[in-house]
Amino acid sequence: MLKIINKFLLTPEEIFNEVFISYEKKRGLLLTYLNQNGFNIYFRNEQYRKLLDTFFKVYQADLGIYLLLKFLKKEKISRIDASTLNTNILNEIINKKIPISFVGGNFSENFIKEECTKRKINFGGYYNGYFNETESANVIKIINQFYSQVYFVGMGVPKQEFFAYELTKNSKDKLIICVGNFLEFYFGTIKRAPVIFQKLGIEWLFRLLTEPKRLWKRYIFGIPEFLYRAIKMKMGKQY
Image (cartoon, rainbow, N blue to C red):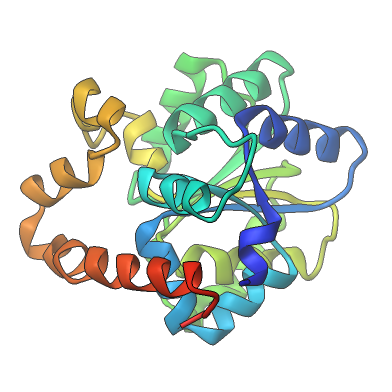
């Protein structure tokens, strides 16, 4: 059985507690999610796979992974909506007045500051997510000056995980949560799928319909690829 299958955090409560216990004890945390697309990348990208297996706490974040875990006989598992989970974590951060910084999206810093003031977020800093790998070292120098122990990093898989790991190298007490495109949803620059799509677990279909040129390969080819691997795993084979 793949290592990742046995290390999933299985409920929102477990994840929530992991985040705030880590913060209170000032111990570092790398937290990310795995959805159907990420699972396919996990198989294809050895560096990403080793990173998740070794350094990250990981939770299941879509209907596909939830059904996969049920298919593989995981008990006491709840469907996790990553956006709802991230909102709840952020609300608790706001309530506790914990400084938080954001990396990701393509917002102006003034926009983020205004939104954080409006939402009563204790703003530590912001850096947009549209930089390339050669700029990472300089970006990390800037981010290390932010007034924050907690970071939301949203740059897409696997770029955000690679960057989050690099960000922890000089400071082991950082609490970094990889959030994909949650920042765009939260700050209202991208509209989420209607609630009915969310409840049915087919938010991916809404995204495909609204961004077909960018996402068609991910879902048209990616879903059969995911199902093929799920069946192979059920048969006791990893690939």
